Length: 76
Image (cartoon, rainbow, N blue to C red; front, side, top):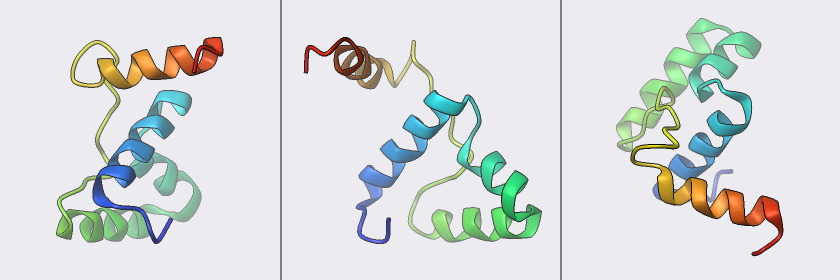
């Protein structure tokens, strides 16, 4: 996780949201508490990310959704 690029981290957060239907911020908040979630989100913000981003399968993330469906069907 430490060696992910910015775009890989964003993709990972979106895929986690896709599978759990919950943002990374809310998952961290539930397991580690509000302060850690806030501080991790602040740290992510320093690098231009946000833990609160949500997955939008019909909007900006439709290409990711296509690839995920192809992988789930076994075509890729």
